[in-house]
Length: 98
Image (cartoon, rainbow, N blue to C red):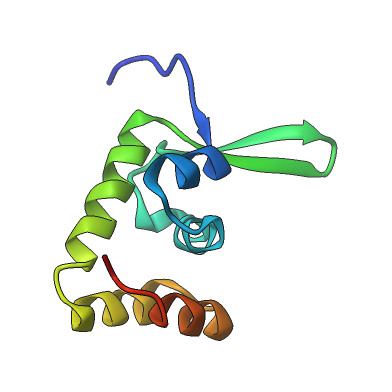
């Protein structure tokens, strides 16, 4: 594995991918959803962290979202499986899966 020389915050990744930051946060909340080491916690203070992804994590997330959006049914099933927040799921389902 190559050495990680930079990471992107989850908010930045959301902007890059045109995704809802809360959706990405919900997906990476369970660190089993991406490969080990793809999700990085950056400590900004004793009790404060932000989530970041390395390039492999960004690629995995893009692939995961692309595959989930094959049909409306697969997109809705993906949201039900990966997002625990019922209100967030309802809000995202109301939008087009692209």
